[in-house]
Amino acid sequence: MVAGEASGDLLASHLLAALRARWPNLRAAGIGGPQMAAQGFDAWWPSERLAVHGYVEALRHYRALSAIRRALGDRLLAERPDLFVGVDAPDFNLGLEARLKAGGIRTVHFVCPSIWAWRGGRAAKIAASADHVLCLFPFEPALLARHGVAATYVGHPLADVIPLEPPRAAARAALGLAETDTVVALLPGSRTGEVTHLGPRFLAAAARLHRQRPHLRFVLPAAPGQRERLQAMVARHDVPVMLLDGRSHEALAACDVTLIASGTATLEAALFKRPMVVAYHMNELSWQIMSRMRYQPWVALPNILSQDFVVPELLQRAAAPAALAHEVGRWLDDAARVQALHARFTDLHLQLRRDTARAATDAIATLLGC
Image (cartoon, rainbow, N blue to C red; front, side, top):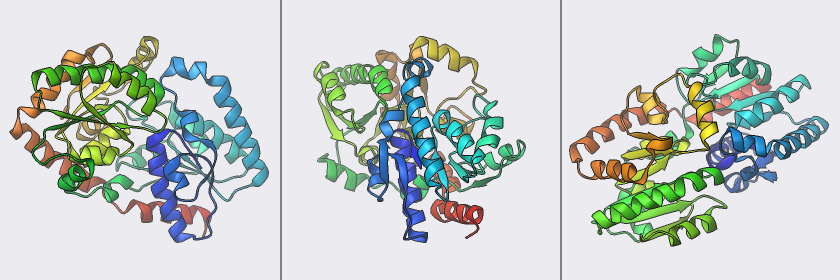
């Protein structure tokens, strides 16, 4: 298995737990993170080695990433595992999967690349790389079938894990927050590039909010390997922030609103039924490249799945601290809007809840013929 960054590590850990329940003697190894390690995964390289932010940054790390992919491919072709599962990270995994598939190793890609949002040309690459794709969203298998790719809708594992009614009181008690506190969760991403670009903006927005509303409490979950970087950023801003080691789900369950980086975490926030302000910022050249390949007006997953701007998106130059603070304040001042969003996110949660563990392992068992 190969999973890149924190979100892939989390998804892979749920899949590993289901696979191990079905096949107790399962051995799994490759590239992964701490959540996978907790399921007995043998990480030959840590998942954060793949956590690169944007095209320009990817070019800077190209030689190192290529060397890892080549070494991993050599080892897997020599050891001949029964199955390779690439979890997200399509720019790394699809090329590796194509090599393994050509070498006679069966391959599964878990999380359909978002060809419906941008870079639709990757469909042909998926067909050459994956024997089967496990899809998180219901419209994806039909789209892949048009390109000759076998796929199964398995739902989103987090929709099974996260309760329909978030455990707000328990999360607040665990974090030492009072029931009457008004809490803002800051989630600037898990990759170094994301944290570098978004961390100062989020903290400057929090400082502005703190001056306007001194009663606010701020929590900031630090992804693996990011605590020292975030701690230095917090020290440069005049705002009291509770810096956490991970615990992003507790922060989302406890908060009243979250300021959050675009990515998988926005779907987690939606499953926790939390109002959010979605932001993203990257190298300007990377942004120009990505902007030209977008097919839809939305970037955030909750908006894409809803086909509507149900939460605000502040991207690139629009992700200025004053604007971020303003949009957070709008959520805090509009209880009716928050309640309507809660109902919409509950419908989305029910749509994505599908016993992902069973569906995914059934699909893999069929592929393996066992």
